[in-house]
Image (cartoon, rainbow over all chains, first blue to last red; front, side, top):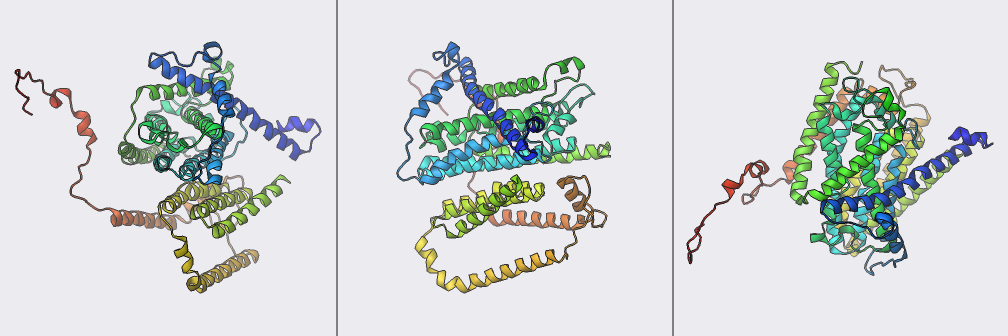
Amino acid sequence: MTAFFQTLGMSYEWAWFVATVCGILLIALPLMLAVAMIIYVDRKIWAAMALRRGPNVVGPFGLLQSFADGLKVFLQETIIPSAANKGLFLIAPVVTFTLALLSWAVIPFNSGAFVSNINIGLLYILAISSLGVYGTIMAGWASNSKYPFFSAMRASAQMISYEVSIGFILITVVLWAGTFNMNDIVWAQKGHVLGIINGFAANPLLFPMWVMFLISSLAETQRAPFDLAEAESELVAGYQTEYSSMAFAAYWLGEYANVLLMCALNATLFWGGWLPPLDIPVLYLVPGFIWFLIKVFGFFFVFSWIKATVPRYRYDQLMRLGWKVFLPVSLLFVVLVSGYLMATGHFQ
Amino acid sequence: MIQTIAFYLFAALTIASAAATILSRNPVHAVLFLILAFFNAAGLMVLTGAEFIAMLLVIVYVGAVAVLFLFVVMMLDIDFAELRAGFVKNFPLGLLVAVVLLAEMVLGIGAYKSGGLVLGTADGTNAAPAGTTNIEAIGALMYSRYLFLFEAAGLILLVAMIGAIVLTHRQRGDTRGQKISKQIARRPDEATVNVKPEVGKGVQL
């Protein structure tokens, strides 16, 4: 895109700047639209599994429900508790929302379609997701109220615990792909199994890693069954309890953008990203970003499905799963995968 | 030009947030400013081309260490009057530490300016490896020339970890742990009994 703006008579630096801003808008605006629709889809799937109708009043099939909710929230009054730490209270949702958008910079939507093709893409995503704790913890502390504080403690302990095993899981993928670059990781999955299946998840050594990554991504985004931070029976609404109007909406949008990001990561790292599922020339006629979106929304369906069917974990069970099951198993698989790759001479 | 703007932005924010870390009265604000300083330092590292170190700084310090800091500071009930009471008494010591740190920085920068640092590559030569990324260059050095130092660092960390566990772990006799495998293996017919009590008589458990 930089070259296109250069043909309009801009200097290289300005062309780069304008191209990057356009790239960001091209991702951020559809993403926000997708988040609005995905909230609707989530509610519809959840309703269908509970034999209810779900939102069906605003617009055809209730399609405009999220926009109506958005408008309602926009017109509400922003209430700041008098005992709250005002600055931090207002910054916290902004932090969550911003961080939820930041990671999308390195996700490849198609061969060559990304904002930034940095060679440490996966580390960048890990870094941004490890920052995600702050939005929650700041909200919990700044609200100066019991339940948000408990929730912030839970959420941050949970996110830190699961990041450890996510780190090891990603290392197995990086070992096999030989790169941290997201686009190259996708290319490394071309014809990965038997020369015909695109995707690391079909590999017997990496399939358990994918299952663990899926569960860890549920825990990382605080979706059911790991939604302990907003367990409404114990903590009212968790760290969001004191929030109203747009600040509350920022949390919602950020949360769903994070969920979509985790779906995109599942697709990109284990199911071949924008590659078609099978390495057959005919399938390449369909544009890459359509494959990518199919995979992302497929994973979102799985996320909703789990939310509708699985009861909430207890806190000690959550910690046990993270530290006593996922951590040793993922460590074992790092050893297994690197041993296999050394034995077969993959690195030569 | 964009790089220059970015540099001045990151540098100014680093210094400002570092100053705010010391000056802010609220300890939680101080920790948050410290985190902002870390983050901007990472931005500076990206500008110098050390993106791997920058990401590690964010993942390790901002994402893990600083969160624990924040935990501790939030949980503590800090008495500000008591904190300030020791200021005059500890001031000379603090000054001494500051002078030593300043001297170290001056020495370090002086050594760097005079070309005294030998930044080697895997085979011991001085040239920067061409066409390799940060991670590859660091990995090639770390797992060849500095392998034993690297392993020794790993051992020290392991000892520190075991030490921390031993120091904080205390065995209480009266806890009843949950055995997940036993719970899953339980079947309805072992867990329930079907009884038909006579009218007017209770059930013997």
